[in-house]
Length: 158
Image (tube, rainbow, N blue to C red; front, top):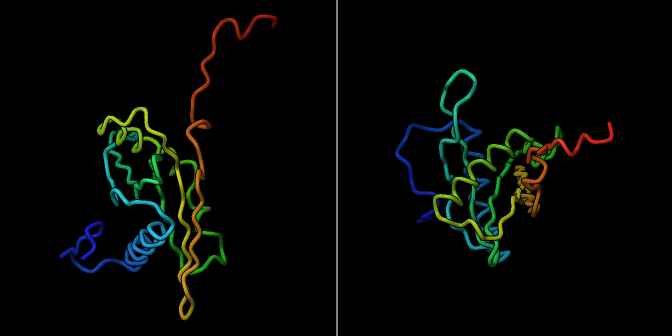
């Protein structure tokens, strides 16, 4: 039995969830073969409230260790890449949510000084063909989400 994905006794899931879960299982095996060590799957945590006051949760599909680097990994699985590649669905909004969840994860486990990165595993599962799996290391960084801090000195000379 896979300890990262325990058996559930819930009602049948919709096809998209089944595909996503299968993709996550494929991703774990793929990453293990590449030398990464899985830590946790489907880490879910509240990250705040939206403009209507409703609680917002974020989920990190996989957290793994690549040597001494902590990897926060989003897995995107599709049955085709005719419309767009799976990794293209990891938009800025999704990246921001994962960053917020990763910051909380690092805070909870006091991992302030650990090296980390944000990866994406893209999977296309077609009938009668082996799955196509790609691992994009450092797919994004927190840098583009950092707010610029302005000071009065920035406006001298205007």
